[in-house]
Length: 182
Length: 209
Image (cartoon, rainbow over all chains, first blue to last red; front, side):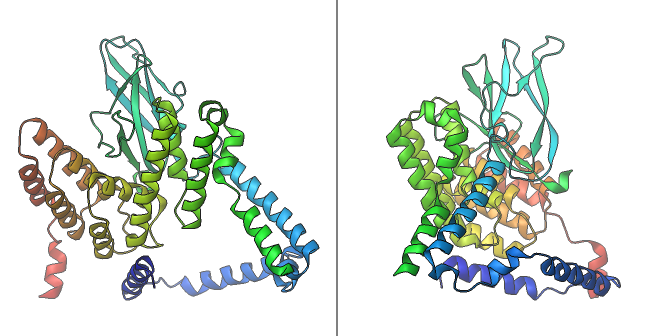
């Protein structure tokens, strides 16, 4: 068994050994869920039939049809999950980004959450006092980002953890947006 | 034979590159990366996916490289390196690790933390505790000059003591301020970790008496 498999197994055993408390409504909720799953499967129709067909890969025509169907589904899911359309992580919550840059003419925040789009999220210095800020929706998860000052200078967020993997010779920061912080 | 051919066809179609799918939708990839770079990235991304490594962080790295004006070869090196680091993290953290944990763990590995230490932390903390923030802070303090062993011990002690993400964020902020003020990085981490460890609630102690 590979290391990761053994570690996973140990973690699962460790977790299963912990005492679990269930409330009084647990049995009822489980049975409601079980009945719902059973009802969904009964109404699945053609999908259920395809799943039950054991010899489908023995026929090239069936295989090609199945492959085409799967590709269509995969393509649709890739389109939906495309970083340029909908981020894959959870709910987006507003995060305020602030940079003090009195001499700057423009500041933008660029990172994983906006696909490193240089012009997507501009900061504003409302009072022209050098305090640039913007509130942008960021999905839960860990994100790399940096400020782009005057369209050419990359600056890490001085108030955030550094991203250790600055592979491109420019500083960047790390932002962790946890669901529990919502 | 027919069955094998059908399976191969299906496998090829299923594996179909995530990189190419994204490339088709985002003109930045086809306009700014040359064909050999796109081919190399596509191979890395497909290989990562075959190993069960999430590919989204790899695509983010490509976008980061493009935004920062890196050339194709440098982007390929960075994505390959991230794949390797995420693979190491995946092996020690197991299939239970989330994409965010793997991404943060890869950052810590990149900073020089042995992957096996991250695996120990995961075992210590259990399945429910997300280690995304602890790994992120670990990478941060190592990059600020805290020796790997001292940084790892500090984060382990925090996680082991049940410190919450907010406590660990405060710890990171304090350590970085201390270092900026001239403290020795190792001393700052060790001292702040002692102060941040939360003692067990008194109610629990009474139950054991």
